[in-house]
Length: 238
Image (cartoon, rainbow, N blue to C red; front, side, top):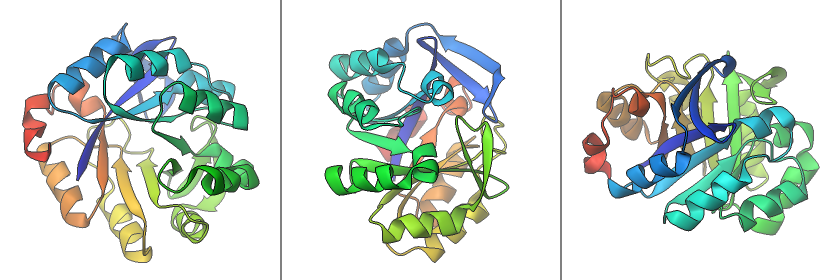
């Protein structure tokens, strides 16, 4: 199972939110490149980079941070937040992203998202299936749709999606444990989806349980920044 630390960006700084609420912003480092280098120094190979300004603005904003991290580390970066157009996608890949995550666009403009899958392939284009009470949410988690998360994922599996990042917003930043039941049902009800769990990871025990469920990867955020999980504790997964 891949361990994928998260760096969320607002105003060029590394921050964390609670349940996606921008009013709960906590700054952990003024320089995200320093954080990325620290991850790499401990043997981490992957990074989940989220442009929270972009998610709110509905277009890519913090691509310079992506560019800096990509040029100064060897981390394989998946980038998301505000990718709404072909131009946004072009900027993200040109700035060093190895993969991108599309969430809102997969809901609001599925034709564009499907064209990305066709053009770039199912490795580079990942589906972001963020939910609240199992309803898909979009626009930086500011809007709730009427789509149920599991049928939503299954519909995109049929369209060629392979990698899915699923975040349960109720768990995000709460340090109360992930949505094990939801992830188990997603894995059991899909055939070829590689599920990346996100939200609520608090301990090594959580990571072990997610691995046992069959998750392909897990995104770790606040637990690292608050010291609940130490980078050296992750060596068994690297």
